[in-house]
Length: 353
Image: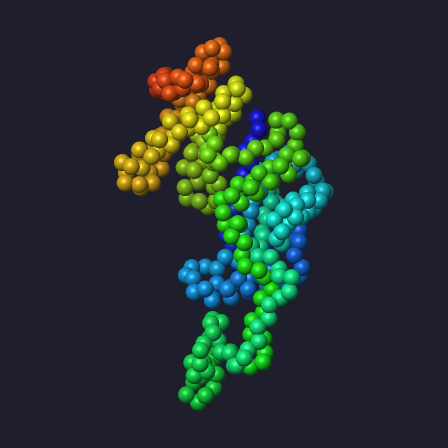
């Protein structure tokens, strides 16, 4: 059965530290290759310029120096063996060509070798064709944090000596050199996240055949994305159980599509069984998030969908058209009644019916 692609998109507040982590043989037990498209010094310059822009903006919080994508690769692609660098270069150069930004990537397995994946760090800024250089028309004074001060008095002690950590740039010298354009706002959007998932799935599928090929959960589609479980997450067990239910829901959706169930009808099933009940639950709880309620709704919905798929499998054409067309809501209701007697037990081996 085809698997769903996983691409995680995160912000990076310390790009040098993150690059050091993903590319370190000491910190990564199964590091196969590292590939960088940027010239020497690029990532240091990027971090410096981002920090300077962040400081000038006066924004609270932490400066975003770069962004990272974690791309899960199917186990079938591990056959590359000695071609790991070729694989990583293909993905990294392809990303640079499509989005026009520099990136650095590393190809890993996790500790147990159960998760073959790429870490790809990229810049939100593009290099200017010509750097913008600003010359000081008078002496420029800065505090230890790099903030520009209006007067020299703020930087000196009673004897007129420069305070520790304070700096001055004399008149006529360069006080600011900008080598990057502004951040591309597209990289912050949901459209980018969806687009890059589809892009990487296409690249992955070039290396797979038949039923091994991957797919992307379409936006507003009938599928439910699973949640990534971070390292040392105290709720890992709860998330895993929820993911198992979501996997079963998605599996049943794939079966339904195999039986030629209309895509729009499946979207309506999700609306009736999950989205509408969740909205009602949120309304009753005054918009407070309730994981237990969501789990109960999802479990009930999945049981109903299992029944719907089983009923569909033995339907004749006329019954099929009626159930998945004009009588869809009645069909959902009838299957929900049958589903009350369906038992789904979540255990170490997944879902048992």
